[in-house]
Image (cartoon, rainbow, N blue to C red; front, top):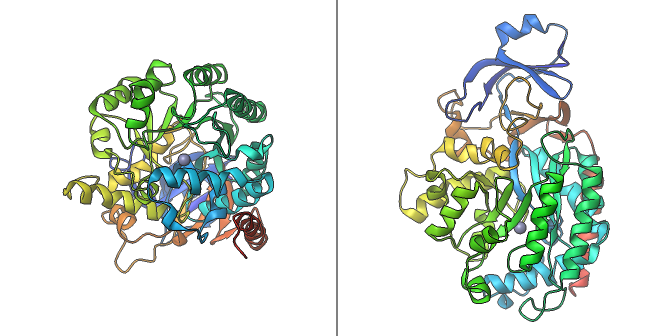
Length: 461
Ligand SMILES: [Zn+2]
């Protein structure tokens, strides 16, 4: 007995992957509870599930929801903030001033709640159904994660959530001093969340904990080892920024690159999601290969910081699983990041053969699901998987057919073409409108919190 039958769409199963997964022209998807019951042709499924409520997807694409593996939702409070860009001469300046001083260190629990509701709703409306969120805000402890989780609960997106463990002391240069007691507070925050939102293969929840660790350069080897222990005890995996700054920084400190430090402290493993991964040597890539680490590629923020371009085509060639993240620094529309990644590596390597449309789409579907250990639940449309489903109404100047649909995603697709979104079998976006929250109220409250944050930076608003 199905609850919903999504009918008459161009169904992209993306199972087992985008390239080989069947595309069904007059397809249908049957949903029961929070799971997909069956995927097939309308001719087969219409009779079998005659009593189910229909969602008519005529003229639409039906596909799995997008998976974005690196977000900082509270960052939306800093969107468009008029700051003195002349102070930002390097990524190091951006991290210390824009990232820490002007944003994270003045982030409050109310700000986290308001921004997370806004960002999660915007992401759902543009087709992102799963995110991996790392909350940063040392002065919002304790309780930062409960605000984040409360917002995610309300909005209805699927998420893995953690707080960044860091020894960094707000207002003090990390070159001057780190404080392990700070890391302790971060661990406690993650543990408190994991109590309510357990992780691991058996955990059924839409929200799960995933331990956040800021970096190898803002934590001592002892803290990194403790992170591995916690992840093993709770089966929650680790999310950590890796090699977003030139390796000279860590080489000066330890005589080793970040991947080497992380391997030697036992952090690396198949449950690790490494974010950015730009300044990577061949040896670093080999470390990732042998440890089974997953990568969250964040091309737009890396470009903004002048950090360089991650060696994504080589990573994929080596069998390293690469997914897509975006830090919530620009728009929240996956289409923009997908297109940027699709183009960037061609331009950077002067090679139009790199990252064809199917491979770009895999970054935000199966690869994203694998990166989070959720490959048995999301990333494709198949019986038994969670019903995280998009109905997209293309606004394209030319036909969208089984032969052209992959190019549609890299050429013209925009998030606003997403019509209906299901997460866990529940309609959370209906004809472009959120069903779970009052969008206007969410936007108003986010704006108020943004103003409060800006004022703390001396901006008259
Ligand atoms: Zn980040």
